[in-house]
Length: 115
Image 1 (tube, rainbow, N blue to C red):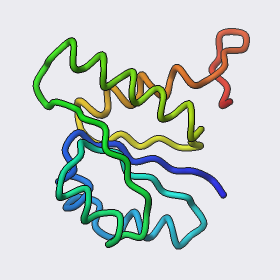
Image 2 (cartoon, one colour):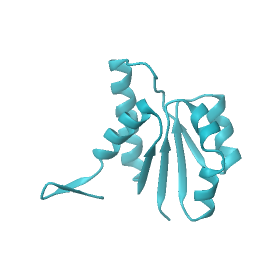
Image 3 (cartoon, rainbow, N blue to C red):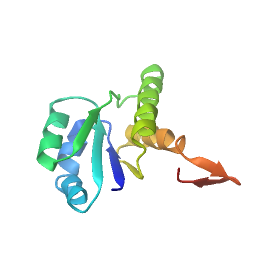
Image 4 (cartoon, rainbow, N blue to C red):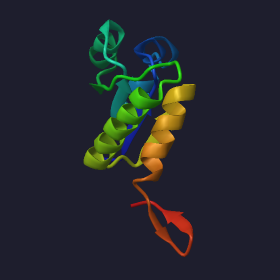
């Protein structure tokens, strides 16, 4: 089963912007994992969409120290779950999620190959 990870900075985005989308992919054979900052909105998403959720604190503002910690936590999570697809949906989550995902690929002749 392919593994699909959705990453947003604030859980409100998972709760409001992806209504039904996470469940759709789950029903069509994907293992879906939603990642956002912990909070009540994230607690609602998992049961409503029937997917696993993971809380990783991320700040919307530029905070270099906290951003490095969030990047480290995302990298550890992605290394552990080894997703096939990463969809990072908000600006900060997009930056951190794509960096964390990029570190999970192998390079061959200068071209990234999925690991």
